[in-house]
Image 1 (spheres, rainbow, N blue to C red):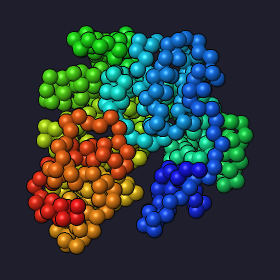
Image 2 (cartoon, helix red, strand yellow; image 1 turned 90 degrees about the vertical axis):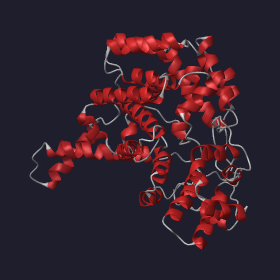
Image 3 (cartoon, rainbow, N blue to C red; image 1 turned 90 degrees about the horizontal axis):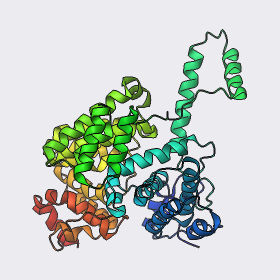
Image 4 (tube, rainbow, N blue to C red; image 1 turned 60 degrees about the vertical axis):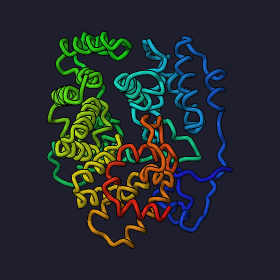
Length: 459
């Protein structure tokens, strides 16, 4: 038996995830729940080396690279399922593999998306020795194949954890909207006629297709080829030239601009490239897609070059202290994709605090009230302190923040030096999460001596 995980179905039978249901009450009452015993399949190594037959040694090397990085950080069954998926993808598409780490990193990023464990592509890029745009490109290839499979049921058979239904619900909502549009195109005299028409659609299998359209992020074949070469190229000079040539071949090659931004000599130049990439992706999508996909933007993979360029541009604007511009783009991203697959909420919350817009910060905290991260807990202290809440209230919030992560105060109070290197990944309540928060927010606390004194008294 093992402890009930935060993402497991709640023991009460509500159908919700444990973290969104009874977890808080159980923690308050110091109750540790056990997960029901589940039968497990072969471990990832057995699947990789005994169950599957690989058409190419390179295919197996990718799987081995992914498995070695993922072991100990994800459930064995999840790793095994991704290995099987990679075997299917590699066998059916015969991908060109120049560097095993590229597809291996994309597999882990895909696993992160499917299990809702946020790990930035930049972090994975360092771990696997590849670039973030390379991971983006390979992830798009994997996702396109995944979406084309009729039996794409990764993580649906595990008795130990329940799949997140948010994407399925969003697709259902899109399906309902599409059916309503079809009905509107017909002039039915009675409600019974409309119902009979819809029923026939189901029987005939002629429901409107709302799955993401498979669409290349680069229209021209030459541009796509040059971009692929640029993503795989390790020499910075050659990579820059290939990206530039990809743009010359196709001015709408959004990811080529993003690649140039990552290689820019300074932040101002980087912002220029990211903005051009964002505009190129806008041209590629068209206004109709923006209106159609708003609210579930990240589900359509053709939108991701735009979202990646937009995030990079906003972050660069924040680094240049053009906070008003950064906030505008962060807010637009959350409007397009409220489920926030990219972790924009943390960056927006930081920006609100930096411009002393505590009211907006509180609204954002309320909007994501289920977020139990240390980032949100400590940021709430800053926001409510900025609004002049009572010392008793601030002390109460600080205690909650300490429960979320007890390692953060050592960095905020200057008792421990903040590492210059960002952590490869974070887990709730651990030292890495403390470094992640302190690196981005330390400057806010240095100007709050009353807060730091209260924090010191509590620790």
